[in-house]
Length: 150
Image: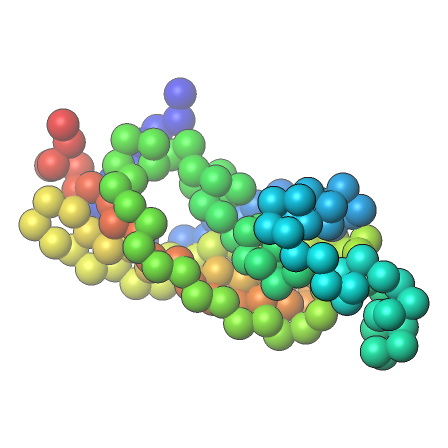
């Protein structure tokens, strides 16, 4: 059992990282099956090369999915306190291709206390195998205060 974190336990600047993941053919196909997105930029190498890309381009939302809270060490520590996922934003900074390895990083950037809950804002970032930031954004969560435990 992981020690549970409540709103009062969060500190601005604390970082939670996800594992490195290589975006392989299986990941691309799974995303296609889930979404139905079959644009050739993701699946047709010749098409990609005609459009200036060396390899098939990862879906933007596949990259966003790498930042899910559940993919980090924070997830099991908020099972009791998490109320809701309120918002997500993302901006794509560099292309990510089939075979690239990425890692998500979530950093506590803002804390707003409320009566029985608090709003925790996390800066989300995806970094590729070269250390380049390829996505930046934010997540906003509603988290119970310790005093409001059921």
